[in-house]
Image 1 (tube, rainbow, N blue to C red):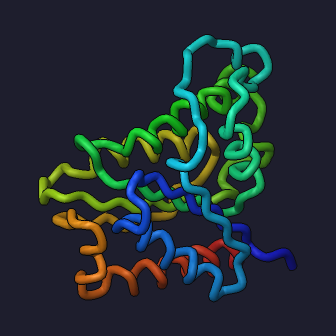
Image 2: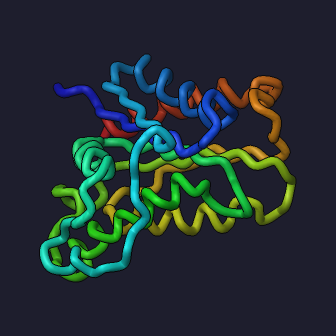
Length: 198
């Protein structure tokens, strides 16, 4: 039986910050269950913003040739996608949103060309979201969740859950949360168990 392939997408511009630490624990939990894990750091990639040129409507491929081509490949090969982004101005980080917008070609595949966006049937892939915000606003995560769920829905990735933490701002402050890292580790384990059990 092939190992479950878990792709981590680090969307924070700050290395080893709170979302990075949580993502690392989710991936460590997944690996402890035998998953094949791989994490990409968006801030280290060259991803040009979507130019809304509509070239993707022809064949479902983006005409911009940059590191996003590698991201498409990894999304296609992954069984589970774990997306991590801090909240910035009540939404996703710029790095994460640029990646999301460049999935327009996958939207075109699904809704215009009527072909699977990632080459597999709907519902098989699972998606998980990690986010941290510095304030304690009631609707702090609403904007980000709307975008992430829209992305996963477009890619035929079933939304499998989230880890969201308010009032965490300074770098590394998540380590002072009583059970955040433990929750992240267990979430990684559960993602693999749930996927393998289907």
